[in-house]
Image (tube, rainbow, N blue to C red):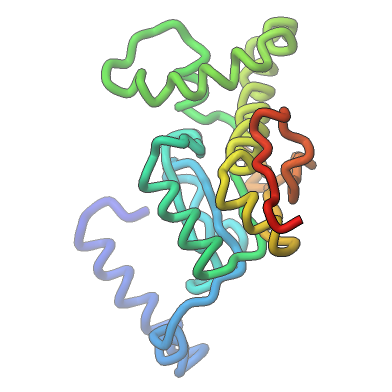
Length: 214
Ligand code: CO
């Protein structure tokens, strides 16, 4: 594990060497541009890096990560990333990837005060409120935590579907498809939560923008 700044730079030199050994034109190709098919919205957690855990290469996944893989509609950073991915890169899939054992979700589940970060955790608490009946009914705390992670991912998929410029893309064609996945730190496996979405039909009516082209 890299523990010092020097480890990271040495590691980089080693990676460049190994990469060029297998593919001498790797960087020449990447330097000409990117056309990733996927946007990944994941947790900042150091244990859930997008390309490594999917065995994908640089150039294949456009990435946005924050605490607990949230889609917050006042987050201009996230919205700019999503806008660029959808409107310019024309990604085919947006994947919200949460993970069991997420510290952000666990903090949101508690009644402790974490200072400034509480304002971010508030949005995760909103996911709890929307699924309160189900979650409060799970007596085992670990199971309730796991389920909270899952419903939070589901809510972030819905939050993406609520974005007007995503609905605009659906008016023009089939993409992007939005998926919700959960990652297990214990075995390294990703699981599809089957909460995929590629239209605004599943949303409450108040979130559905009118397709003016129809
Ligand atoms: Co996390």
